[in-house]
Image (cartoon, rainbow, N blue to C red; front, side, top):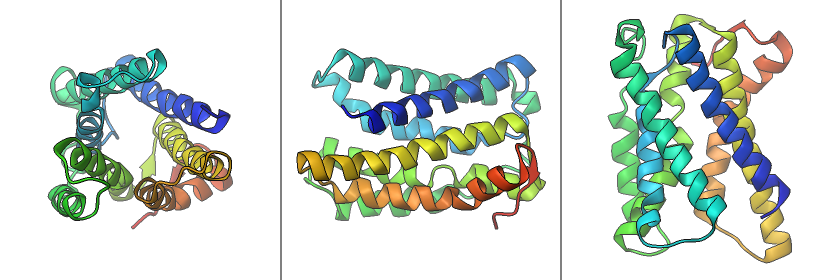
Length: 210
C-alpha cells in the first residue's frame, strides 16, 4: 500500500466521522442529504460483498466493516433517531436517475460478467455520482454549514488522493484499472467547484453548483 492510498483512506474515514459527529453532537441532521447517505450505504454494501468470500488483510477487512457500519449508522440517525430534523423538502434529487443508468452501465461495462464483479462495478460507478443529491440540496438552500463543508472537503480530498494512487500504481506496479480511474475522475470533477469556493471564500459560503 502506498502513502496516497493510505491518506486517501484516512481522508475518507475523516469525512465519515465528521458527518457522524456533526449529527450526533447537534442532535440534528439539518443540511444533510439522506439520499446521498443511502446511496453511499448502497455503494459500500455492493462493493464489500467479498467480505463473505475472501480475506485480503486485517486492515482491508477492518476498513470495510467500518465503512459499512458508519454508512448505515448515518442513515439510521437521519431517517429514524433524528428524523424530525431531516429537511426532506430540500432533499429532492431524483436518485432513480442515478441508480438505473449506473446499474445498466455496470452490466454493459465491467471486467468480468459475474454477480460480484457486476456489483463491484456498480458500486464504483454509483460512488462517482452519489454526492449529487447533497450538492443539489446545498444549491437549493444556498448555503453550506461549516461542518458540511469540511465533510465535502475530505470526501473530495479522498477521491483526489485515490487518483494519484492509481497513477502511482500504474508507474510503479504496472496496475491499470480504467473503470476505477474514469469514475474517480468524474467524481473529482464534481467537487472542483466546491473546492474552489472552499479555498477562496472560507469554510462557510453561499454555494452555487447548479
